[in-house]
Length: 352
Image (cartoon, rainbow, N blue to C red):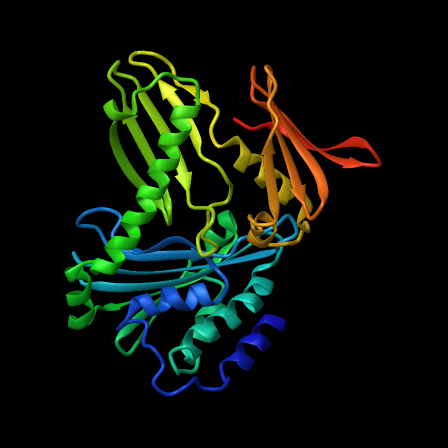
């Protein structure tokens, strides 16, 4: 059994550095470990719901050729007083044994970062192929049940323990003034983008009269809702796609307006960013493994050249010419590149 051989080999690997972080004592150290492993934040360490757990969640990005995606999370639940640490791989085109061959090095690094070897009971759990749990000193390890593999192709481990008094005390104190300041700055930055999009959307609105409600959806992603004096509501979902640490997925805000008692309609918003997103998506390698190539995006220069019936954005990348043409009537677009004097289609669809 090839998977079993890998498991046994990994069980005897080198022990990590002395004084390494204990993820149960400091769950945020696991957040840093996941970020250092190349994952993007789906949620940075925070308490999304008042009274709910503090947690972070990270995952790999992927491409059309990606076979396995890793993910992980850490949490402290003030209601139960428990710490929960989770690691998972999702493998679409592999057997469970092949997925285990990927998962074991991930688990090994998890223990190594804490200055430990992988305990033999953990090796047995991963290789068992069925849901089970083991008690190892102060914590319990539980493997994902078979139906999660069958239905979602996910293989994972969850570790739970009692939170230390120091860890509980820290989360009860809440975020520091510096952390609050960073969060507020990102929120304000994104709100300003939404208000600018509303002003440019063509839907009448008086900024001073709009009443804002904000919901954080994930790391650096917010849903802003603005009530106007007529009883209608603007809904704007936006993410800080300039931050390479977080998982935005796309570029540009999505904006809609719902009149009181009426149906929602989609409005144009940040079309230049959306054109840049489609261009970089077309130019980066298919197996790139990231949704946004930030270094590529920074090199794209955008110049508007609108007509009466179309929004037109001229895009320059290192002297290469492209253009993004969006019909105002229905939001359909085409992305083209210039070669030998002619425009060649690269992509198309609906941009809003």
